[in-house]
Image (cartoon, rainbow, N blue to C red; front, side, top):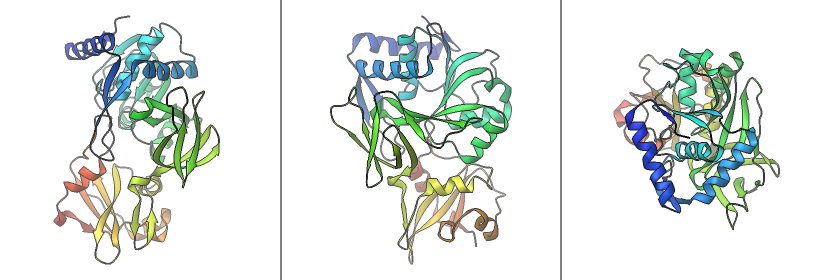
Length: 335
């Protein structure tokens, strides 16, 4: 079924993908680049069809499902929405991948995929439009505690996805918002284990060998796990190991703005915890406020403000590049 396009450029991108899909056994996608340099990965059409079928089966999505694609078609997330529409024989609407794709729309959809930044903006501007979508998946980055609260307040449930380019989109899902869950549940036929807290994915239909990752997890059952963060981002500050993603979740309870935590070289600690805020020149917070939600060693020492975070095409914040762009004179002491 030919999709509905919001612009000629989207139509051009779609038919470029269809041409590649029809002519090549392998499809080229780029990794997100959030933990290093983005790289090209070639994935077989059979793998993409398998992944698409698992999602379709999980949500029991029927032919002629009315779906919305508002992600870049250059990313694995965008390409997989296209593949799902082909495999499932969906009626697909393709819109520009901007920060609020529903702003000019009044249609109702059965299925849609977003990144957290889009969900945040839609909740701020058009929450009722989000309620017109039966099933919503969100990926590209974790949903913060603050965003989860907003979803719950608006009585909206979304499915946070867990996956990576190498796993051909998501391998597990968990509900967030109105009906929240603590643990991810894997799709049918996929099991998980861990080695030194790092996730290992057993996906025999997709891979001959288990896939070892840098994701820190707590295994709850062969098909359930709690995600703790990325091992790549762990900060060793004075011998104390800090998980910035876990601390960010705590901080989101009192900071209703965009921010990240990173490690900054320090002559006494080796590395100190630093806070980076996006577009907020009036930031002011006391040590006492931070102590309400953070443990002693989790309190950042300094902060800096940037006009905008460096992001990947999938919407993930590129921590390393964002930190690299900050001049040393821009850091201010918190306490």
